[in-house]
Image (cartoon, rainbow, N blue to C red; front, side, top):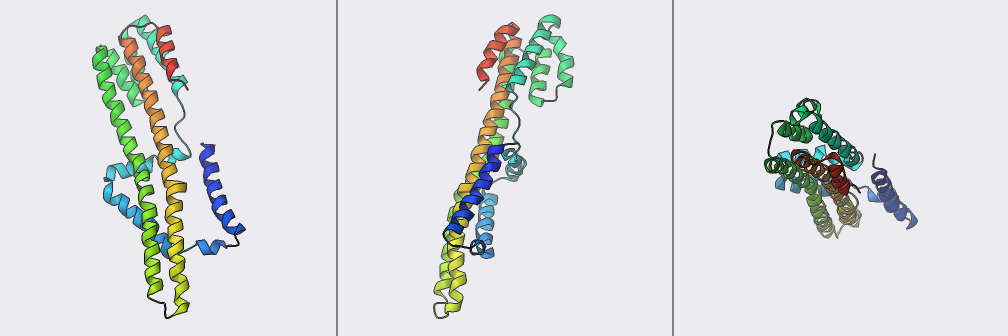
Length: 246
């Protein structure tokens, strides 16, 4: 569980609602259905138009990383690589075949299978780099969905504000109808800016950092597997991979 994300969400609500209360405002003044419909609906519509369906599905599947990110496996991964290296030195590369069959991580399993098949170091690196870059690009594209929505949201809020002002201008002769239009105008702007800066853009940046962490882990495995293929001793491999630790 990412405690900073939880604190951030709570602090965002406290800051907005607390500031509104200190200024003498009421929570009800910030609740406006038409404004929410314009901003949320318009932002989602823009995201749907620009995003392929598989990318959008992936963005939803990794959204949980904000609060429950994948754990940092670098140190554990170094231990695994050292065990693989030791096995390869004792039993040969074919000894890794049984380990590959039991390996739950698809990237590591593929690398171990390539080692067991006697793949040359250059070919091994090339094949695994394709996997690494493909997954990183896919997850980065998913994270950028939220970044793009963070760019659209304030503009959609301005559209809502203009629509509210149009409503106001059309009812200048009837003061009783002015309040609703003015409320939509100002609240839509708040919704657009707040949604972008307190949720969408922070979410995008957090997801990008998690994606880079996962890519760093796979890059570490790649270096370890390549080193095993080149016949390096376990101690040298361990010292090399420790450079990936924070």
